[in-house]
Image (tube, rainbow, N blue to C red; front, side, top):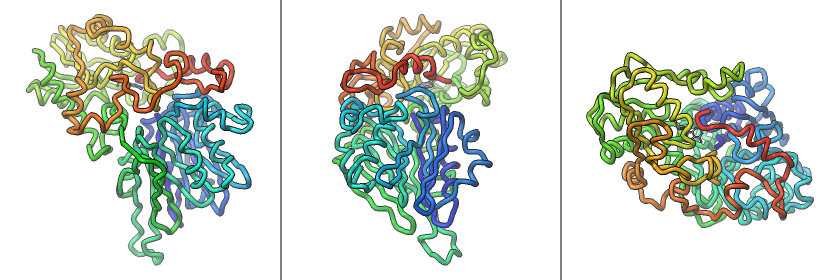
Length: 493
Ligand code: AMP
């Protein structure tokens, strides 16, 4: 997962707007952040590991000037958490520069690497994005849009892109539209003599970030579409492929902000309706309904509404415990989830609880939560999950682990219930998700739930998930797999 944001704002501070935009997308990636600006035909880029507020602070931003900017926050799905892998990527070739921010995951990196003159030795980093950037910069046309038209037909997988060159911010969405990308408008100031062109345009992973920067959502960028934003001009749209949208359904279940809209659906409402559907599919006698905070809250509200049971907050979440929290010692680390979540004894003691969460990935956090609630005196714990079991890894940009680490790929629902220690456990069905969203199955990618991958994944899924390989199947950088295993974020980090 990643968040991308781009801004074209003549006469205004594009970097400030892009930084604020990507700050509103922080939930999509907390490992690294970066920004690229273009001013008078010169690109400047700054990126680092860490949260957006740490990387793009007020000492850094004023030095990044210009009317064009893109920004990115990263959650690694290929390549490890090292500075080189932070984005935007940057490349200069034939006297031209481009910077790229990517949300998604390419699945044919082996073939793409074979197309790159000079091969892997030319890549400073180990991500699919770096490879794509190099292919675009190498394109003989010397023009970013023409390069996209030449290169994208060979690229397979998930990519929503924010690209910056000397004159343009360019938004691109892959033909399946796995990841969201939205076009927005910044209204001109009423008294600006330059009229309508004094406003600006933005692109964003999510609609909510456009509203945060004071813009108006115009529309989703279509699958297979390139949108070109230039100073003082209206957006230009080019189709590079026939698109058939199958948006990642997990965006609506878990990833996106509740105040964002995708496929015309508000995500809070979608999740609340999933909770209502779950109450219909899996009723149980209990005293109260509570969420696993924060992301389980809308579905828990829906479950309470559907079941007629009272809604309570049975756990408190430490809102400062992001994944950057540095545990002072191994002993502290083992305390695990207690740093993040603590039960409210007053609410749960002596009660039969319905605990609602949006998903189970490895089951480890859920198991700790159940243990905490029991310790706090809950008499029964009925887990209700507002998505189906995750049986298969995602190859399109979500960090669901390799197959063997997904608890539902190796355990039945009863076995998962026993592992996490709940009295009962039920997952919402795919039909339940669809009824809540009131959209047909073929509008979404459900691959992590049913294994039907819209774009074939060519490699051995268990071994090669995260590795950018060369033609011999060798990882691009030695030791990368081990480094990734060590650095890879765990669910709920
Ligand atoms: P676990 O019991 O360890 O599988 O963790 C389940 C929790 O992880 C749920 O509360 C989800 O909201 C959360 N979750 C699901 N997918 C992810 C992800 N890709 N990254 C971080 N947390 C996630």
